[in-house]
Image 1 (tube, helix red, strand yellow):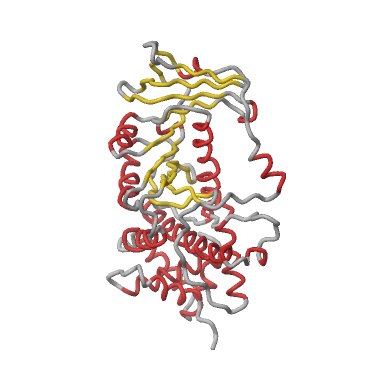
Image 2 (spheres, rainbow, N blue to C red):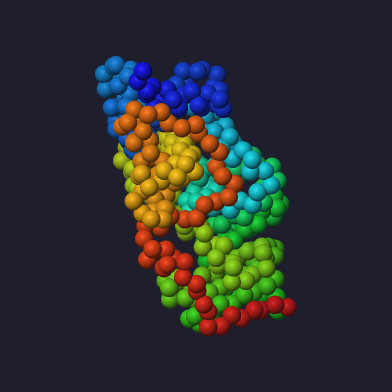
Length: 385
C-alpha cells in the first residue's frame, strides 16, 4: 500500500485539535500547509504540483487558492491557535521569553509579531499585518497582538518580553506592568531619563566610554514609568546599547536582551527568504497576507515538531552533516519531510514542544566560539540613590 499524500497524513493528525464548522476547510487547510512544506514557498502558484491529486487545471487550482486566502472563515482562532495550544501543552507555570517586533513588506505592509524564543529561533504566538509602510507602529495598532498572546499563554506563565526601540511607549509599559510581565526594551538616544538623584537628561548623555557599562537603578521615564536602565559601549556591538527594564540592572540585562537578535531576526529571514520566500507571494492585501502568514506559522510549527522527533530519535546526522546541530529545527523538519516523501514513508506523530529550550544551532565551531565569547568590561559603574 502506498503511503498517503502528506496532506492526508496532516489532516488525520490535525483533526484531533482543529474542528472547523465546515470540514472541507480542514482539508483545504491541510492541503495548503502540505504544499507549503514541500514547495518551501509562500507563492501560491508554487503549490500547484502538490495539489495534483485534485486532477483539475492550474487555473482552477489558483481560483480555489485565492478563494481560500480571501475567505474570512479561515482564521487563526479556528486553525492555528488550537494547534499552538496543543504544542504548548504542559508548559503551565513555565518561564517564557517573548519578543515583540515588526517587519516591513514591500514598503507597504507592516508585520507585527509576538513570538516565543525557543531553540535559538522564534515561534509566532500572535501576529497581524497592517497596511502601514513603516516599522514604527502605535500601541493601539499592536495591542490586539498582545491581547491575543495573553489568551494563548499557558496558565501561570512567567513572561519576559523583549522589544526594540520602536516600542518605548508609556501605554505599552503600563500594559506590561498591569499584566505582571517582566520586560526589557531598548531605548532611543533622545529619550529623557530622570535618575534617582532627580536630574533629567537624554539617553545619549548617559552612554559610557568605550569598553564600559553604566547601571542606573530607580529611574523614571515617560512621566510615571518607574524602572531601571543599563547602558553599554562595546566596539564588538557596533553601537552603544541602552536598555530599559523592570528588573534591577546587572550585566545579565544585556545577555537577556541579546536573545532578541538570535530569535526574531532569523525568524523574519525564514519567512522572507531562507525558508518560505514570502517576498515572491505577489499578495497585496492585508487580510490575505494575514491568512497566508497563519499558514506559514502552522507549517513552521509542524516542521519544528517533526524535527524534535528526529533529534530525540538520534537521526539528525542523516540530514545534517555538522558534528553539532548546524541547522535550525525548522530546516531540520523541512529536510526530514522531503526525505520521508522521497522514500514514501509516513511522517511521525506530531509531538509537543519540549519544555526545555535546546541550544542554538551553529554552522561551525568557529561561529559558535565567536557568539559564545565571554564579554568583559573594563569598568562597570552602578548609579543608585
